[in-house]
Image (cartoon, rainbow, N blue to C red; front, side, top):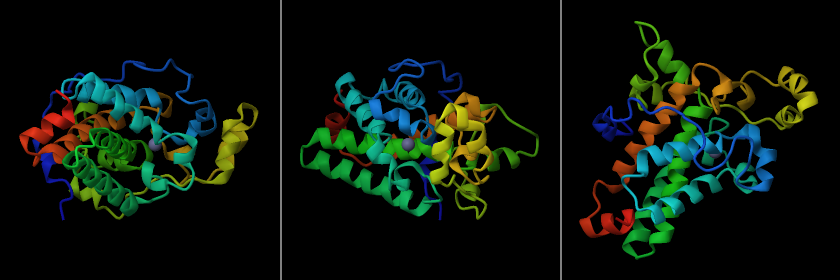
Length: 248
Ligand SMILES: [Zn+2]
């Protein structure tokens, strides 16, 4: 089954979009004080924010986008990190994460119908957080690059929803081990990484440019997927609900 048929509509409009820096939070600063304890478990806040501005600035009013961004970033607060692999596509929780995305999409639409636009913006923010994390926390990008017979393509050429890869038995996401906490302590980081299994989030993630040359592919895929999720959520909305949702 093709999970995301709308992906074919994606355009190349973000061809030149690259991670440029921080829109909302300076490097090494945190939206919430407790975030420093969850640092290694999440796609960096600044890239979530940058992706949302690049894709959604022209689609939402500033007021609406502010709420969407706040809900997206709220997923990486400590309470969203513990016991919620489905928020972040961690620990091979693929089916739970897909179900979570659809649950939040249904909540977005039902909230619009019941005229609770704030709840709709929050649900959509949570939805796209999970969708964006898919590329940073799974081996999807590695699999996609391995499938390019002509060698590595430009990051903007990445297909964010190759049906073969989405349904591949080789698809994995990083497992979260308690011992990864050691890697948060600078003096113990090397030791912590050495005792961390290779299927751990700590080894597999593409959360930041420091993770190597595959990061720009993860960034581009998350960018395209955000647009796809917006289209999938709004395609069947009547005009008055679309206007309510975007606040435009
Ligand atoms: Zn996350």
